[in-house]
Image (cartoon, each protein chain N blue to C red):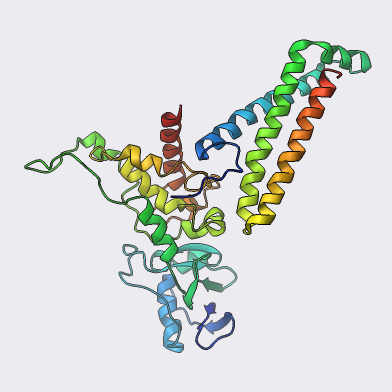
Length: 234
Length: 115
């Protein structure tokens, strides 16, 4: 199989280029894309990529595989390969540090804006802050996000305004805390979101939903935020 | 956090969004009505001017015209802030759009009421 790798080392290269590597796939076995990258690295040890848990939990190896974002470690080659060719590029829209490694600074800056932590002004009880099973259920489909950035970097609105639009990942987390029965800062959270960019640059094209490796639905969460803003404004 | 601009029509994102949605419904209703009119009526000068002679239709038409202006203002403001990163050309484009919409509304009022 032909693997085409995006290569860029800002210290030695004037411009990014694609490097073709021929990889022998073992018979009768479907490798993950990350395994293919490991084989490519055996041939050329200078290729740089992030990886850690290799089972879709840590979110380090988000990349663009034949045009679609996903986690290399849990994406079978047979799912993405076309005409016996695999093109691997870094996540789109973020500055490239080297090869497949991107600078996630803007992504984290947007995440930080939504105050991704529980705010509760009431005095701490002697035991835990309890939550009914029904209230806990409201967080399902929200808390599972691993911040791999596959969704936000698949979103054209995030490409155009990465400094002002929070992006699908950050907004999913914004709603995770808006929906939490133990949080007391809902008014403040909503006040921080009602400008024309933070939430409303979402045009609902659902690229985020189609790429999320955890099967989450940021567009739905954004709809919930919009409804909360609407209730607050009318 | 974020950016509120003096050049957008609403004071914040939710106002812009509501304006966009409500005006879209008005424009859809107006379009459907006109389609229905064209389908059910044998349109000639008499029928056309009789339609526009009715007070309610003048108001409906003005509402549609204002909706176009509001809808286009929000939409083009969004497009301009997406694609034009330097402030001066962006402001000039926004000002030009607003001027065109203003002219259309005043001109439309003149036409509707035969001023």
